[in-house]
Amino acid sequence: MRDIRLIGLDLDGTALNSQKEMTPAVQAAIARAIAAGVAVLPATGRALGGIPQAFLGIPGVRYALASNGAMVYDVIENKTLLADCFTKETALALLAQCEGYSLLSIAAFVNGEAYAEKVDADGLRQHYSAEMVAHLVLTRQKVPSLRALIETSPHPVEKFSLVVDDKARRKLAMQALAERGDCTVTSSMPYNLELNTATANKGRALLQLGSLLGLQAAQVMAMGDSLNDLDMLNMAGYAVAMADARPEVLAAADAVTTTSDEDGVARAINAVLDGQPL
Image 1 (spheres, one colour):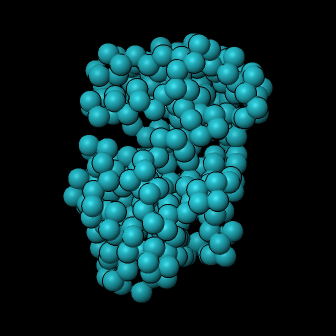
Image 2 (cartoon, helix red, strand yellow; image 1 turned 90 degrees about the vertical axis):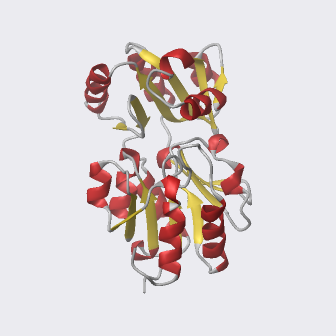
């Protein structure tokens, strides 16, 4: 039987279903794990402000990993535990380069919120579901200038998230940005790119939190479906992929559960608590 004491859950496509909802079954499984002494937290590419209360409001949820691991919070004590953010100089240089691509949106994650000058909802609808477009529109705080925000904010940029209007241009942008050497480039959905520092990722942050809690990697479980979950699944002691995960994610997993629309997270958590294989 696995001695799992910490579980990091990706949100979109994992703990949240295709309707961007956390089902009662998933909430109940998380609550059951917490009652058994297991710390369960969202491990997401979203900013802290984009994490739904349906998760954070579950009694006993104390930690949150946001912005692909750039930030880890104690949400009960309202304090930052870990931070790995861009310098102002690097953030401004990345913004200038990204503005040269054909973008449907670009957001800078600062102080737990995602800020954007505009979001091309009509363009996004050509590529994403209505639920995803609504999420992107609702979670972006509008500002006149991202450059001005970065230059004047006392808080650093945690992450950039952009949506490129064409897959071929996205591939070229990914290559060019990766060649810089001062950032990592990953993705959580088609057409998007996510930029973090060269050292920030979900896996590193999750294991650092585990270390703060006195845990070994073998006691850490991670679940996900997208490329920005790969480090987390590769580094956790027990890695579970969703059935509809990217091939690279499936290859990195120790086990595969059902999809988010089939309460795959609940199935995996309950299997661990019951000492049963998936």
